[in-house]
Image (cartoon, rainbow, N blue to C red; front, side, top):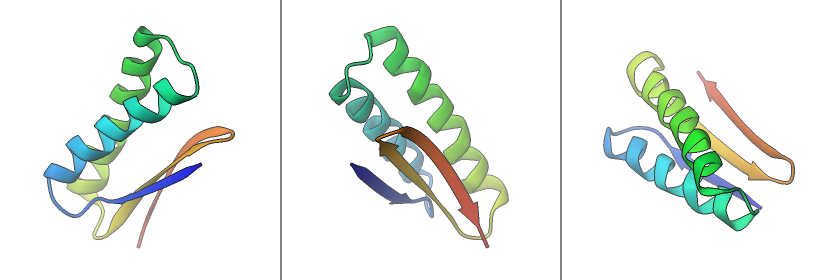
Length: 71
């Protein structure tokens, strides 16, 4: 499963964070672990928003991998 969220507006940070919780829950992470994943995604998305000209957050569940790219 893959979910791509373009990080172009500040609201996209919240969307990416919420989706991270949904994905972590779907693959069986405990609640505390879900929020740890969400925190990492939130920090990543905020850095993309602040420092990248354009960027996105890709979230995978098999294996769980969160990556970013910017141009």
